[in-house]
Length: 260
Ligand SMILES: [Zn+2]
Image (cartoon, rainbow, N blue to C red; front, side, top):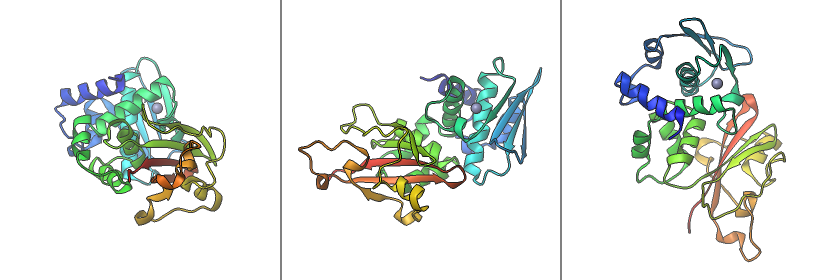
């Protein structure tokens, strides 16, 4: 188990927290001995400053979603629990809060936040027997009161239907992930634009954002994956759901296959 995850589980059992949505997060932070402040921040979403005996966590009050705020608070609490001897001042931006390819400490803080907000056993229980869809991710995000992005990563790790993730920023694919033993190979477009027939491309190209009811968009297998010469694109059912953050110009494409 990752360090972030095990530290979060230990904290929950020490504090007697069973379901994290039943405890105000600020009380948990205060209970651990840190101070939490919410105010407008420039160029950062959260920040932690360590003093000799304590620490001040500041959260950007301009974050538009409550769930995202909770994720940032939990991320900073992760730094507080794990890195107090290593860092003195730390700023988090949308880039450090992103799950893909981050420094060691950022990964630990994200894994901590993910487990604190969505404990594995509860998450598995909520997914059980439910068909994968954008609606399911939205339901999970409401259930656990955390950002839809953090839910997508958690689902990638624990969910019952395999999904692939592609993260693009400023019309460039930055990173992608596919499950181990996934039967399809990804066309590596790192540092290139998203494929022209992808939903991500539609956003960067013309600002297109689909309404909730249409957020599950059919795509070709060949859009993101290698199509073998003996395969026919018509024989596959692939979908793309884009989680778009316009203020950072980022798109997280969730891509999955449904069997015919
Ligand atoms: Zn951080």
